[in-house]
Image (cartoon, rainbow, N blue to C red; front, side, top):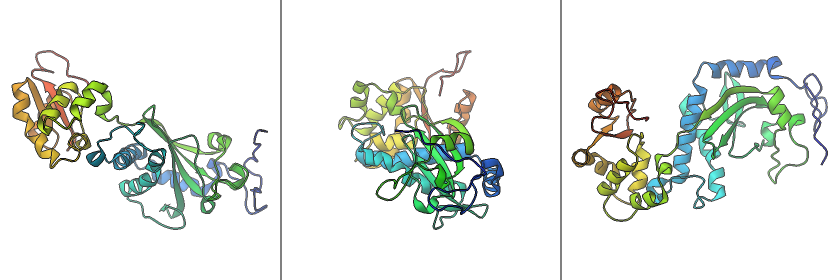
Length: 301
């Protein structure tokens, strides 16, 4: 197949409707610069990290299914692809943006479409052709993501009719040369259960013994790792009130030499801070008694 040769900035956008407008590089696009200015005043990378994490948790539905790894064979490819649909609503909520039509939102009074892929390209719908798009790429195997702001000129989309919905991919050259990177690769938090061996997973997610004992095993296996709330829901999948069981752990864990801290409690946050660890509300950590004291290094959380 011959390499796609794109028209450059300054030329008319003539892919399907000749002469409609000129192609614009990001530096010459006033609307793009206005949107970029608005985004630069917000923690966009952190917002996307939170939105992606929430979207993955939503798709996995660990509290009902017991799943914790989006790359697991138990997860259908269609479910992985649906992360993008959920993420659109998450990022609007986190950044306080409205849901609008025909594109996804308005930023600085400019229509913007939000596109996400867990692969290598995005499916740009016809209503977003020649419009501004935030294009986010998620690399699940490397636990990272990055985003660009780009005007998806028709001339910069791959030729042909696209898929059955007439969506077309964005040419790599256009992304690399004429888009505006919003942030470089940002790390995605890893579900702590993915650090366990298969044998450890089988013990933690077993039907028996009860939740308290299995969660205690998890704390031993994941000593020093920050464990978010959704992990407890996964371990207690199908059971009643897993978080209540987690709260019952402190005394039992103390008898086995573990100090269990939860960011929801002020005293726990203070104890964690004294060890150089920042705990957010809903986050838990188990530390061996005396860790971070008497000159010892605090565990890497």
